[in-house]
Length: 324
Image 1 (cartoon, rainbow, N blue to C red):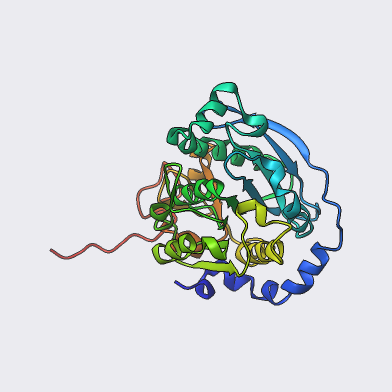
Image 2: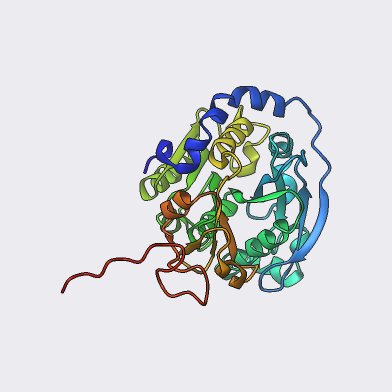
């Protein structure tokens, strides 16, 4: 499936035509909005800190993005990107990953400095906790969810998208192939039915192109005659903020008219009104914009409407028996 065949992107063709006008409006205010300092637990109980920027409008539910910083930096590195994302109508959670910034204990910081691969794998629990927190906030559209990561943050984002098929789009600034023990080349091969954008300067072009060859629907943009890594590109490389925002706007599309529901741990999705939805743990519940979107990501429709139904009596018609 190509990007133009994506069910979500077909819905957003009009949005793509208006991209330049929309970005101009996003850049109209130079001052970034004030973030709300928040704290919550990762899925394994580790205490995390983040800045939350609620959506700029409360007229409807907004798409949301989680920002994942580079190695040995923190959430403040995203400052130049906050205003364009916020003006675009996204809710934003800029997270300090464990061992970094205000999410660091002495032990976790030492593990990061020692480059222990295990702590970078544990950051998936950080993302699960961040997702669980942000979807409880007002005016959040659970069916439109993106990740933006830089350097090792890009590796963490790709690993998350490989496991969680509700991630609609991933932006990677200066991604690596096998950085700090995270196999991005293996993870991107598992990402189907989603949009991925790789951004890098000329000196770091090899990894994005290799990742594109391993994945599907991957776009690469290389900034020529420049040298900057990860979030260091922000505010320095011309148009990088616009490129991120325009991509997310197209990839996230418009609000869903007929969302479907699933579990992060299951290959099945359920139509609205199914009794199975109430059986899914809140931390595992995921929302997709349409049945077509869920199926493009490898899910299949449930065969019943609830625990009391016989197979074939609910979400899908019974399948004919095969002749021996």
